[in-house]
Image (tube, rainbow, N blue to C red; front, side, top):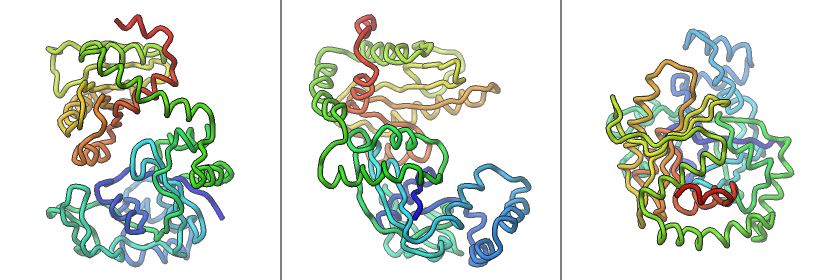
Length: 343
C-alpha cells in the first residue's frame, strides 16, 4: 500500500462536488478517451511518453502527475487531499478501483457546481453553461476521515509536505504521519501543545484586533507581519500608474524571487467575491511583467468566512483566502515581538 498527496488544483468548483460523490479527479482532458487508459496501463511509460509528445509536442513536467494518477495509484492506496473541504484542513481517502476512469464514465446525474450550476456530459467531457470543464480522469475512492485540521492533527513533516505546489506526489515515507493524524483526529486528541494553544488563543486575539484597530492599522499589521518574515514590504499608492485591480500590501521575498500581493479586508461577517476579483486583476496585470519573480495573491480578512462564490473563484484562480482566525494563527506562529512598531 502506498500513500499519496493529491491536490485539487483544477476546476475545484466541479472537482469538489465529484469528490463528495466518491470520485477523485485530475485534468488532462486532452487525453480523456476510452482507449488511452488501457493503452498506457498496458504498454507502460514509453507509450505514455510517446502519447504526450505527440499531443503536446513537448514533454512537460506535469506529465508525471498524470502518470502517477493513472498508472501508479492502486486499489488500497491512501490519498491525502489538502484543502478539502475547507482551507486549513485535509481529508484522507482510500482508492477502491483497480483502474482509473475516463471522465465520461463518471456518474453525473444531478451534478452541480459549488455555485449551483448544472454540469452535463457531452462527447465524453463535462461541461457547464456550454463551456467544457477540463477534467479528464477519475479514481473511485471512499472516505477515511474528512475535514481534519492541519494545525491540530498534522505533524510538522506532513504539514510541510501539504504545502507542495504540484498535483500528485508519492508520500509513502510519511505513512506513519498520516496514520497518526487519523488516530489523533478520531480520538479528538490534538498532536501537540502548540495546536491547543493556537486554538484557545485565536478568538480572543481576533476580537482584540477587530475592536482596537481600523482598516489602515490592519494593513500596517499585515505589513509588519511580512517584515518579521524577512520581506521587503510596501503599501502601494491608490493612484499607482497603470494600476488594475487593487493590492493593499506588496511583500517581496528577494532571496526566493517571490512576491505576495495582499488584499486586506477589515470587516465582520462574510467577505464576497469582490476582494478576490480585486487582487486577481492586480496579479494578472503584474504577471505580464517579464522578470524572474513568482507572484502569489492573498486575501486577508477579519471576517469569519468567505462567500461560496468567492471561494469558488479563489480556487479557480489560485488565490489564497485567509479569514481572521487564519491570520491570527500566522501571527502567533511568527510571534508578537516587534508588532508594536506597526503603529
